[in-house]
Image (cartoon, rainbow, N blue to C red; front, side, top):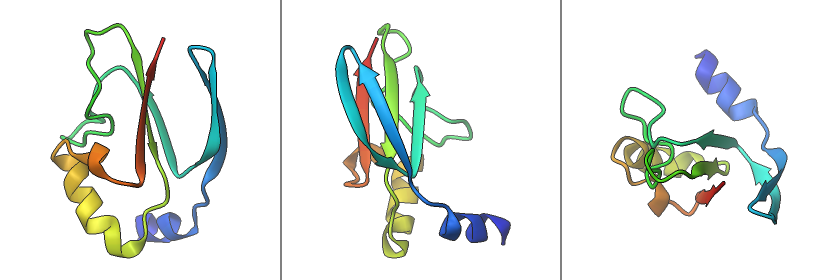
Length: 93
């Protein structure tokens, strides 16, 4: 119940990123900076990340409409989140 209440009331936050000299700005519901693909419990927030490549990976998720949550949850747990139009992936040093 708490998760649903927070999910519905949470607002996207503005972000500014500088990745290898390139500025990226916008709004994100979730922004994860990582060097591995998995949050844990088989939830893959950055499915394109490679812990061995020497890069940091940024997974950005925009607010997902209610009707798209089941599909995107499936994608999160099947390493397919990068196929969502609500997801962006950046890589840099």
